[in-house]
Image (cartoon, rainbow, N blue to C red; front, top):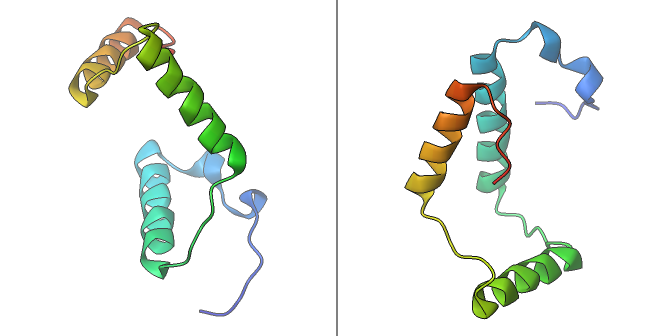
Amino acid sequence: MSAQAWSADSIPLDDMSLSDKLSLIEAVWDSLSQKGEDFESPEWHGEVLQQRMDKVTRGDTEFRSLESVRQRLKRSIFAGETCLL
């Protein structure tokens, strides 16, 4: 594939179905994960993680299982709510 400059404006997102958009995201993620390139997380990522771990240590919050988060999202979606985890 030749090198081509892409932009969000060149992809017809408004014309794509949800399924097509998810397939596009999956294809991009697969491509990124197969390249083996080292991506360095920004410093603020570590800071946010440390703040969250500090909350857990203090007992101000707790971890949720993936399954409980999925169930909460499903209930919110079916109820038409905006769910902020």
